[in-house]
Amino acid sequence: MPLFNVRVYGILIDSKKRVLVSDEFIRGNYFTKFPGGGLEFGEGTRDCLKREFKEETNLDVTIGEHIYTTDFFQISAFNNTDQILSIYYFAHADEPIELITHDIPFLFSPHQVADANGESEVFRWIEWNNLNEATVSLPIDKVVVKMLKNN
Image: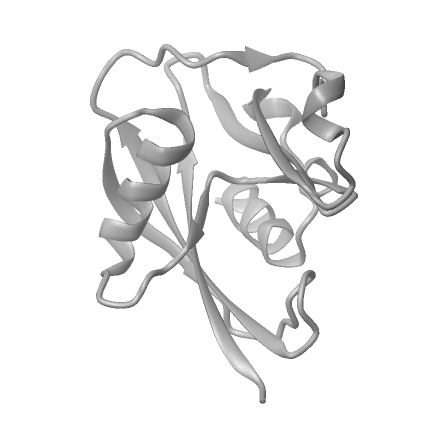
């Protein structure tokens, strides 16, 4: 039975005009996406994003302006019976950002990608001037990057 999968993502831009992305290894595939994740039952979208940032980065964030909500049909990259609905907001760090990041995409240690069915995540900053549709993997993220760069 087809299901809707609601995802909430944050665009965090630091004082150096860099955008935070998550390089992820998921079930044998590599993706670059914005931080965030799945909405849980009983949760609002802003609360979801605050929770996801805390879980993934250990950062407390304030959720800012709404950027975009998916307005086209998108099937899930992970389950071909789910339709994805993604919601994007700006996120602002409430504290100094002390997050381990890498400069090289997908810089995983061997144990992080040893299990082909496993999942791992590392973070990376992308300079605003280097951000483009090719720097992210997911179709809806590409739409958001194009919107951000055109504004």
